Image (cartoon, rainbow, N blue to C red):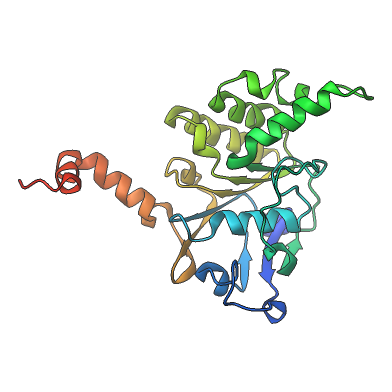
Length: 254
């Protein structure tokens, strides 16, 4: 099998534009969605980046739901709902799958990870057949760990390879060192035939070399590189010229 294992698990998603009722209402009025036709995915890692409000989480959510994941995160088997806040965008998305089928999968959503942890604890308190769910996350309740530790427990223990992993801002609770550790873990999983789609603000997480980087902006969605992203440029300028940048931010003259 060639050409990136023929897209591995997810080759692309398309917006069924002819069926969209109106591009004047949310979420279709977001510029990135308004201009969307088809989004192709790298068989290893695809990044979705851009400023707040550009529609990254909305797009990630729609992709995940269209593939059968729970809107608040978890595996295909999770069905809990704390509050139905997801948009209808997934109803107008058509995923094009690769010839291979994943044996594992997870929708990691930083903003609702607390709800996922609570649901795992609740299910493990109920009598049932089989082992405790938390064992696949390292054996310790996610609520009994720091935010960063509980995030990393999923990456380290729950993600097992041969999987499709969709992650929305996984760096939210990770230190720079942990973000580098996550890059290392991603590489291990890619070698085990895994595919990642990641929305992030972190230049560290964007550094995976074999990847696509899509930037969402008022002009739409464009394919770019890590070095061309605003996140990387601003961070580099700040670190290389901290004093000058601080003077500009504080409105102080030289």
